[in-house]
Image 1 (cartoon, rainbow, N blue to C red):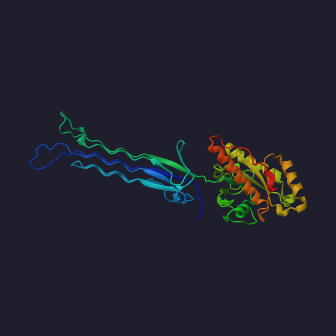
Image 2: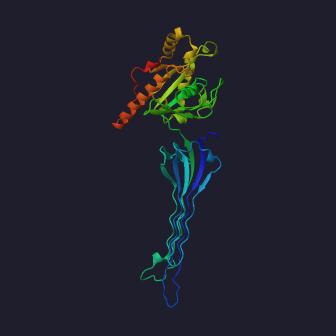
Image 3: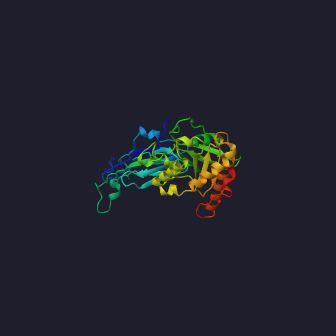
Length: 359
């Protein structure tokens, strides 16, 4: 199934039913008086987050969502039936934005969370409400109110604790296969990953976290090079980013890994300053392709040339070297963040002790 993470829809709530202007007509009751009932309310359009849905593909074909209108009132004080609400199910992590103003209408981040996208109109009043001692035969009644109408933009941002960032063929998909049960496509050519992948990493029987893999970035993504910034939104909810860098000897003939690493970070800054400011760890991958006697020197040289002062992990996603230490460090860091949030403070931007444990 094709992954769709953007869509535009129109939501139209139901119109309220009109009130009735009628009079009681029965044998032997010459002055029955007004008995017009009210119109029913219009149905509303309600969005519900559903964890069993993971893409917005259904909204490519169904663009207009219109709720049922309310029934008109009738005589004998019969009130019109209210229109049924229209339920629209969307993936968890869907953001609704007003297409005209750009304002965020709703952000559904939990399974079962609901929001009213368009409220149904009120039903009109029957002439029963207008009778008085001086107006015994009112013919006034009101019409039902129209329901709300909105044009909305839908944007899906996947929910994950950790996000993978890096050039195409940096080994992101191989890494997520190594630490989780996810099985994204892996091949020896750029842009193997064309859509985000999620994997659950189980550190032990009671602790786990979710990791997100997105298509690789290249220099010039802000201008549309490669897949551009199309999928970076899926990293905005993460709590820490892993910047995977290929340090295999192939760079001796094909380019400069330090330059490319800096280019990726610059693309991150161009897209979103808040995403750029997220805690970011450096993960040097493909250690298996470096001679064992030279690994320490290669890692040290890259860190020095890159002028990196944050946490560094050297791993091989292919054979699993260093992956276990990295996942445990991530789990400890996320646990520390959760404890700080429970105490009512801001999330910690600090780093785990001994971050190079996996090197």
